[in-house]
Amino acid sequence: MDTHHTSTHRIPRPTGGGADPATARPERADGAFSRLPDLLPDGRLLDRDSLPPGRSGGAVLWLSDRPVADAGVWWGHLRRMHGASGLWPVLVGGPRAGPFRPWRTGDLTPCPVSAVDAVDPTEVLARLWPRPGSAAVDPASAPGGTTHPMTPGAMPADFPGPARPVGRGRPPEVVADECALVLAVWRRPWLGLVAASRGADAPAVCGWPGAQRHTRDLPGLCAVLRSWEERFGARVVGLGHDSLDVAVARPPTTPSAALAVAAEHYAFCPGNLHPLDGRPAGPDLKCYALDLIHRRRWHFWWD
Image (cartoon, rainbow, N blue to C red; front, side, top):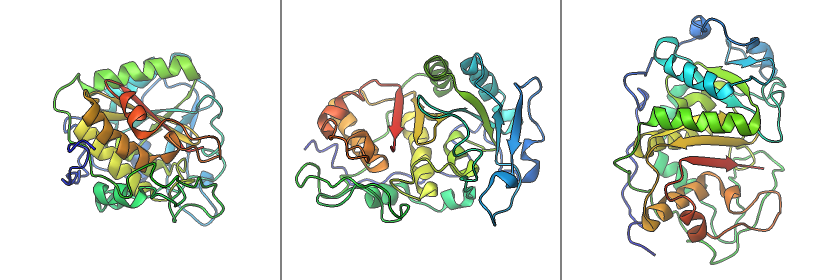
């Protein structure tokens, strides 16, 4: 295997300050939504009444009441306001799911940003790596989750190491705005706002449960997202019931670099290569990697 892919360097642990110091803001508590922008579409705050029984806290998400026309335009507008509002926009929903589950069904379990700060993304990826002969699901996942046995020899036995940063590319904000425009056309999404100082923290702050068929380690997944922000200019754009869309300003440009990124994707979301619902396996790691070269949107699906 290419020596680039088997590098033993570690991912620098991102700090809580955010990938873009110009837009980073400290985490705020119950008053986090006091600066909701004017003229938003009709919507509501999801607060403690939307959380599981026994949990308490302030609002975790603002969500529109229905699909939003020009949601991609709205996303870019709200993203540009993030530095003043402290609210990160997300396109909510997907091709098969509406906004009710998990957003309005008590399935949100927010976790503090400090939990993300404490996690090493390299250790997360190494732990989540599905080993040959094992099931492609983290032991901490929800009981009864569907598993997909790995084929011995199909993948390396252990996580081969993190990908190196890609140094040059387009401005991340521009690429994220373009990605949001495309996703909005495809999916007619609802519009959401999360009180997060950076997009990578948004899943943790709002308690998104979309990856639970693979792992319950939401802080760990967000730590990896932070590292992608810093290494690849990635920005979280969309959250679905069991999916995540990330815009990528500095994608890999060579097969060897893409192979290293593909390994991270496989640890982060094995279902991209081996569906968790028992369907036939998808492409092998090398074929999957080739599709990542110059790709500016990474889609993850845990169904």
